[in-house]
Amino acid sequence: MSDSTELTTGTRPTGSAVSNQQGTRDIARQTRIAPAVDVFEDPHGITLFADLPGVPREKLDVRVQDGNLHIEAEAVVPTPAGLRLQHAEMQHPHFARAFTLSPDFDVARIDAQLRDGVLKLTIPRREEAKPRRIEVQAA
Image 1 (spheres, rainbow, N blue to C red):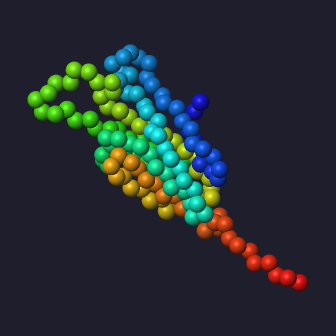
Image 2 (tube, helix red, strand yellow):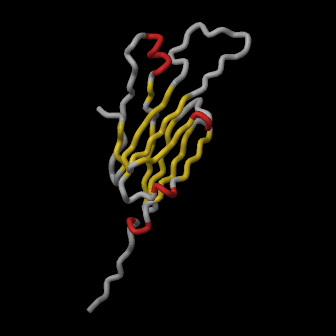
Image 3 (cartoon, helix red, strand yellow):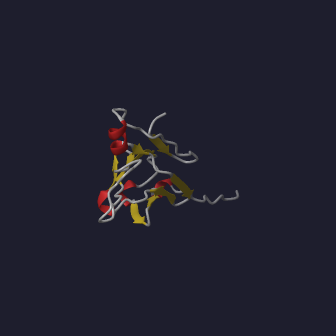
C-alpha cells in the first residue's frame, strides 16, 4: 500500500496509516493517521471532504506541488487546567494524506475551507477539460 492516492475521473481514494516503530511512547506522539476522505465529482470539478477532528487552521497545511495535493495537519488536544493526563492513545495526532491530481484540474483555483473539523477542498476542472455539447449539423 502507499499513502498516495490518485484523483482522476472514476477512481476511489485509498490510503494507509504510517507509524513510527521506535517504541510505544514515540508511536503515541508521531503516529500518522490517513484522514477519512469523501470525494464527489461533477462536470465542474471535484469536492473533497477530509475529516480532521481537533485541527485548528494554524496547524493545517494544504499544498499542491508537481501535480500532487498534500494535506498535513496536527490536532490539538487540550488538557483542562487542574487535571493531569493519565492515559492518552495519541497525544499529538498527526494527519497526512497525498493525492495525485489529473492535469484536468485547475490547481490555481483550489478553494479550501475548514469548519467543525472537516476540510472542504473545491478543485475546479480546467475550462478546456469540462464536458461540452457539440452541435451536429444535418447534411
